[in-house]
View 1 (cartoon, rainbow, N blue to C red):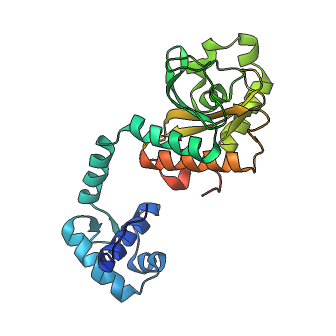
View 2 (cartoon, rainbow, N blue to C red):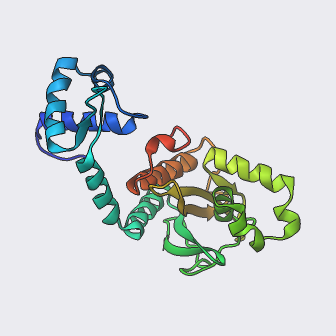
View 3 (tube, rainbow, N blue to C red):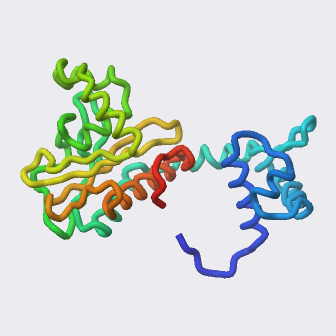
Length: 255
């Protein structure tokens, strides 16, 4: 998001240093912080003194290494508490529908399987067969494949035929979905409809929901390197990050 105005560069540099700490695997030395932020050690030291004073950063007295402080933790927790998942998801669906011109929906997990909780129609036609509250079949839908790929088997195994759930073909297919971050069906269970689905994770790394784009098979390209896949992966990644999921943990390279 672009913000108009000149801003205060010192605040932006301090925030950049906080991001360097956030992405690190652990506490950092001053030299490593400076290198990660593209700043000189002397300039970095001045910022760190102020950040330590505010509680956003802490410095270990023994090692002199820096890490995120209590104030940073409290800010993160407050942001998570104020996060409205459905509102953010609807914004993501609106972006998908506008960018791709296809219907987009969000499904979450229930005791009976995936259920549609939000939906936006696209410019290239509607999917009236899918309404809010609709239960989605696990097989052979793209939505169902994503849930099965990321949820513990015990949660979904009883919802599919035993012969299928224990088959090696299903295991291989779900591994491929998990590795690629995208599931696709062409056509989907709806007549002449194809679908693309991607997972959304929360701050704990748990599957929070699945975003799905559905369109006529002649208009929805499901090529792994195509625009539709890249856009869906980018939007799902952005939504996951808004829920606190570490961006570095997400697969794929589309930005």
